Image (cartoon, rainbow, N blue to C red; front, side, top):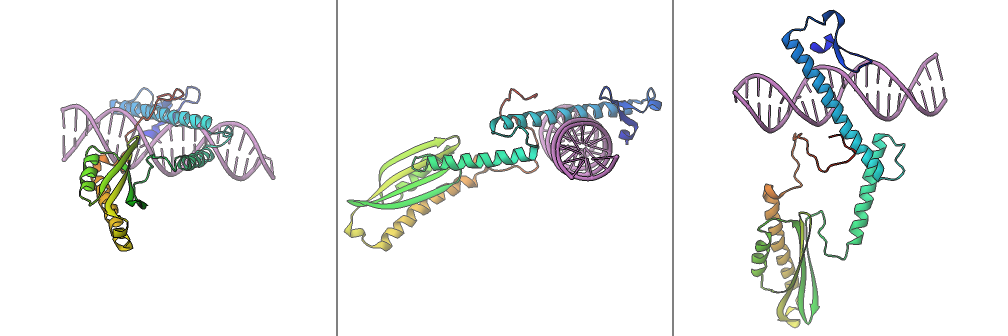
Length: 222
DNA sequence: ACTCAGGGCAAGGCCTAGGT
DNA sequence: ACCTAGGCCTTGCCCTGAGT
């Protein structure tokens, strides 16, 4: 291999040929030398990018000045988990889309039987019309609906009412049947979305190693 | 299909600071 | 003085996208 004929200049930090071979470099050797040098520089830039982002993380989490890299990452992970937990707690009773897909159905009586149903999933263009069609097919009347979005996530909450009076629906079995039916309807809309890959941002790409810059960091060298 | 360049990852070597 | 952990550097291997 060419690498055995190369050595590092301690002062300049540059790759050099072995002294005896300098001056006898062929074209292919010179190309390999240039490639090795450029790879070495690229690798250095990569390390600089990583270290710049680690420095940014260090600035975001308290008491990490003296931490080694692995401990720093562990501290950041635990901090992010803590923040996510707090955020979840803070928006418990608010209509805020969460990270996990979810369908919920609850029942309550307000003179007649009501269902409070919600669906939380990734937004896709046809989602709202699919929900509309699905709910129209149910033997229920839409009382209200509320939508909120966060990034690519959407949460839609519906209140549906049964026109019959309370006595007509005293049968717990019938209520359960309707509840299941609503749940099933919303779940099928949700699953339709997760089946189409173009709207699955959470999907990982194995062996995909292209660099993606998520944000510009002022401390970054890239 | 093949080649090439660019980039990511991991192994191994070297250096240094801190502990014993 | 010796050991060890952590960090940096070089290098080989591999993957991917672009060009031919």
